[in-house]
Length: 451
Image (cartoon, rainbow, N blue to C red; front, side, top):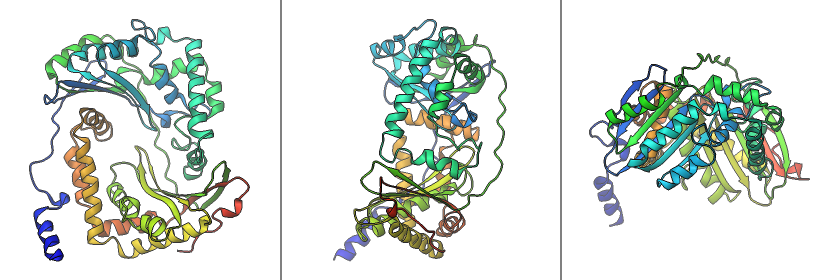
């Protein structure tokens, strides 16, 4: 009876990855002002709300050695007031209108967004225009010093005083060559933050915070024609900035590297990292699927072998960190008391070899693709998520409505694709970092398991 019931359920609920229907579309209009500013508008009249999402095409990857942390520092400075909206009017005006705002910085971009009632759009765009066009003349040393200290404190909280917090800062320069845009952290080095002068900050703004290096997405209960007219009125007089050239990093390979870091932690944690691929490149989707097969669910291979069945680790994760210029793939596991990290690594290596030899089962592949697609579609429920994704696609692909193409690349992934990328990327040279309790270096991983 149970077998028959399961068969009926399988017939009644088709796999998400095999669903057929009209192409997924998020329609937009795209316009470019004479000063180079790009405006993307998506009309969604289902709820009377609006999101503005501004991407400046500058992240920590655009910094240089000795001057790291500027992109993130500027994210903070952009909330310190401008000519016509002195601090703290930016937040107060939006809060009074029932809206909220924030920003974030990655290796490749800095974004700022506002969300609120549709009627608050003129205020949102006026505030964004004022800080793009008229913030620099209000920038002074006290503001820079204040936000420099804020960022330093954030660094202490998130990196230096956070258990395992120095993992990425330790691994990045081992995973990427010296001078590579991804060989330092987004938050920057403490010494570089201390060295940043007012003129350094102003030069950074003049170079990267210009209309021709920005894209604004407006999504929600709006009319495209009205938005275009409003943006032209508010932004047209802001002058174009200098042309920006970004060198392409040279190809490289990762050599096996073994590192140990003693920290104020209770349990040892193992980090394995490999050189992978840039976002949206040919093998990117297959690596995402591989990450899910390894550790994306309770029944995933590493989760079972390390956490539930083996009871060797408290947690295990795997993720494909593809970025604009390059990418890496990581596996992370925290040992249970009484286990050294070589034990965990032996299990991880065995699972990688098995996956490379036989690929995922049909059930594993279907579950991974369905889970990725469901997560992808669930995000589109929110106007804010659509706005940010439109900006991401436009920067990476030159096309804002790339949703269906993105979905299709996951649907095309085969078991053979997953098997191949595991063999090609995850059996290659890697960086191994052990973070162990202070005074217990014997718990660290000490050798590479022979493939």
